[in-house]
Amino acid sequence: MTTTPFIIADAVRQNAPVTAAFIGPSGSGKTYSALLFARGLVGPGGRIGVIDTEGKRSLIYADDPKIGGFRHLQMPPPYSPENCSAAFDAAIADGWQAIIFDSASLEHDGEGGLLEMAELEVERLEAEAAKRGRDNRAVSQQKWTMPKLRHRRWLNHITGLPAHVILTFRQVLTTDFSAKPPTTILSEVCEKNTKFALELHVAFGADHKATWTRVPEPFRPFVKQNAPVTVEIGAAIAGGLGPVSSAKPEPAPIQSRPISVAAPVAASPDMVRLVRDWMAREYLEEDELSEAFARLGKTLTWSVAQCDWLLSDAGQRKILSLIEKDQPLI
Image (cartoon, rainbow, N blue to C red; front, side, top):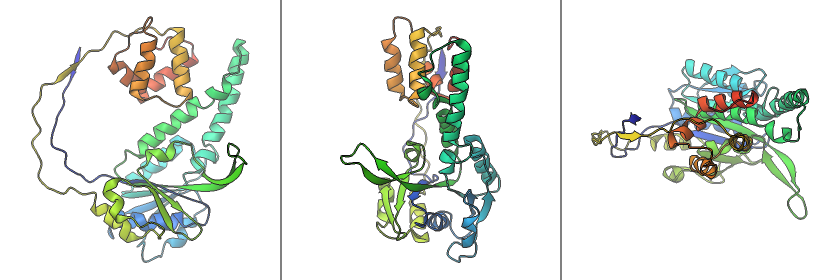
């Protein structure tokens, strides 16, 4: 049995980095707007920068007096999640307080991005299935398991950095065949759940005006719909981030709550299928995962702590390595 100490205190609003998605078609002003917004977030003396995958196009704004200068990192391919993480780490090491990734769409459809990773997975999985004489009908689902896991690790990494993060996403025209009749719509180029890891969503049109489609309640008084993004908006949001009081309440003393951990059990075939399905669908919330394990109760006894482990990066790496070797998960 292990114990985990808990500290309970009165909630106090604290300074925390902003994460934002700036979305729009080419030429809609995403890069310039992101630079202005970032400058407002960090103030005139703060250090902002662009991780540039767009052929150094951000450099045309290097002398803009409203922006007041910025750092620049030219990122070559491949645009794998690991290389993208390395670029963000380099920005942090250089002291950036606001990081603009322009354009994050290349992590999806660029050289070495998710789409290319999935195609390489197809080749690997089909070769493995042929080698073992297995049916390869599940390849279309399984090809996304590793790429999406690597993508989520990158996203978790950058949203936990001690800097504001602004990702720009390109929009392209696509056909929605589910509509009757089929219609042409603008869709952002990124993994479908990526933007939901970011707290601000800002859509841009050809007139460079912004529509704020996702804004936390404390920030709503500061944004202006159907208007350009400005330094002032970033500064107002930054002003709303800080603590409203300098008082530091004393933590309430409480007894540590023990967490019982059931003895690990070997994985049944049903469990392997469950985890394969879970990873192919990207993830399940903890309560969904616990419920799924409960349905397999005749062969499994999983504690909440073990579910936490399964949802962790270490657990996912272990699962992937063991599934590939057809070994028990524990």
